[in-house]
Length: 132
Image (cartoon, one colour):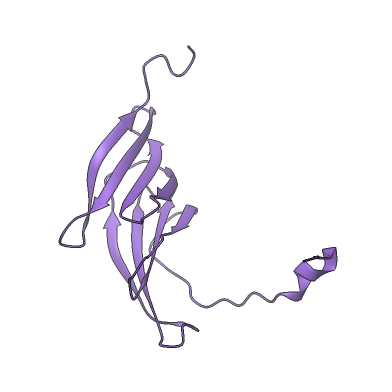
């Protein structure tokens, strides 16, 4: 397959939906691998210190979303959240940012039997600040 430079401009981007929920600029958005679900899951994180888990339910033709739900808002950080990343199976979410002492942290969440995301692990920066 050969792609010419001007081919990339032939695609049109259409705004399907706007997700509202953060009170400051969004730093990262990640689409979860959703094996066998009848919905898509997106996580977003923001300068406002929140992580929001969204569930998007497509129509039967998968051409648009009939329903979008703000599934859960995780407000435990209180400081900007930088990045989010799903596990390969979509059952865990890693969230990176800083804590109140400005140390780098990664917090891992897992979905429980009630479909709520709960913290299962915290990885903190070592005291030498990565200098050694």
